[in-house]
Image (cartoon, rainbow, N blue to C red; front, side, top):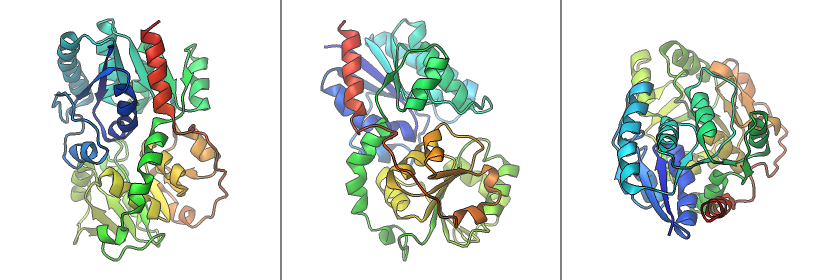
Amino acid sequence: MKKILTVIGARPQFIKHAPVQKALRREFKEITVHTGQHYDERMSDIFFRELKIRKPEYNLEVGSLTHGAQTGLMMERLEKVIMKEKPDMVVIYGDTNSTVAASLTAAKLHIPVSHIEAGLRSFNMMMPEEINRIVADRLSELLFAPTKEAVKNLKRENLKSIMTGDVMYDAFLYFEKMAERINISDLILGLRRKSYVYMTIHREDNTLLTNMKRIIKNVQKIKYPVIFPVHPRTQKVLNRLFEVRQGRIGNINLIEPQGYLDNLALLKGAAVLVTDSGGLQKEAYFAKVGTITVRSDTEWIETVESGNNVLCPFADGIDGIVDVKRKIKYRDYYGDGKASEKISLKIKEFLCR
């Protein structure tokens, strides 16, 4: 039986890995490596439990470091694992430091790489994620594109891709009914559906002191209460900028990071999502919840073209956007919910040729 080594390290990758791991383990000996990029229990372990992902065979415990130090340490530790396990292929997801570290390490050891969620481009080289995507795509043998736009991007770069649809949509369809059984008023006392804005802010640029202050000041102008699960890095910034009273900054209610199912329940119950997360932009589209993205660009251009998503850098003027009723065109941009099976099949064809 052929051996697959999968490298994951951050919350969005755990979600994507849930359906893919099930598909891969039907055909291959699959070994999961957790780099430890997200190491807080609320950002890591809870996802493995909720999503029923098999416990990783390896945890590199890299933790939080600068980009260069983190990527270098991941490569050093991954190299030892790959040399020990001798996999037939390495599978990577998305655009994190875990992604680029695994692609570089595997390529240098002449192990073929499959990149799930290939071809995404924000065309903003100031984003570390954009650099990671480009490098990972260049080094991968199999490029699994989630959308037609991703296929076009890769074609412009003279790279051949396989259109599979989005594995996050696979996960959403599988876990949606579980999330619907969660009563959001049990999560936050008195919370009612469609009566609040749900917000997540975590990207490096947005958590700079001046930018975060600007974003929070603008969000405070929204007439709805705002529910804000706070990333540990973001919490440190907020504590420096604002006086947090009883877990609140004005209309903004700060709560701990949520597990996948609770997060999905709170998202589906929201009137509007405010975020800088790529994954949540898509999940909001799947859930038919209007989105305001606190960025000047997005790799998920379909969500903007559909009318579901509006770009709003630094949340400037956000109070006027929240109340706008947008006409939304829901289409199957992200496939049929069977991307994981297609990926497993294509890997099998590649390795058995």
